[in-house]
Length: 150
Image 1 (cartoon, rainbow, N blue to C red):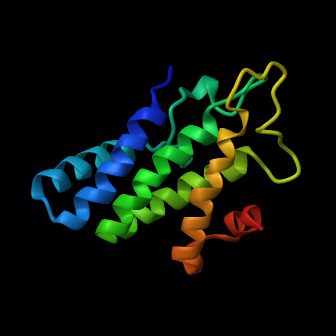
Image 2: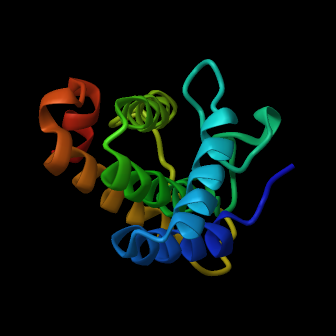
Image 3: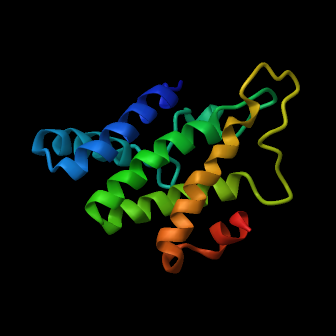
């Protein structure tokens, strides 16, 4: 039903950000394989994440949707920064647009929890992804994403 994006993605993010500048072919190959696998899981609607379709964006308690996406999309952004592959950037943009559609501005409450138990604000770190995406690729980011940032 889901996978541990927090631990796996944080590890891969650190690995890629240190491995790519070293020009280590083995490390680069490992990072490429991971990024390619994640990109291959993108749904037609742009979704990339840890949840099966029946669990996405439907929470009454704390949800890991935005936090898991923040950790995973940072990996994809690191991969894009290292490779400058436009297809990777477009996949990230489509994934972020999927979030915007499912958490519409002024019409959703992704941080509301009836029974919070810890970490409810972790999803706020999704702003890391939005900020990096906007600052590095502002000309390619749609208005939907820009409005969410501001």
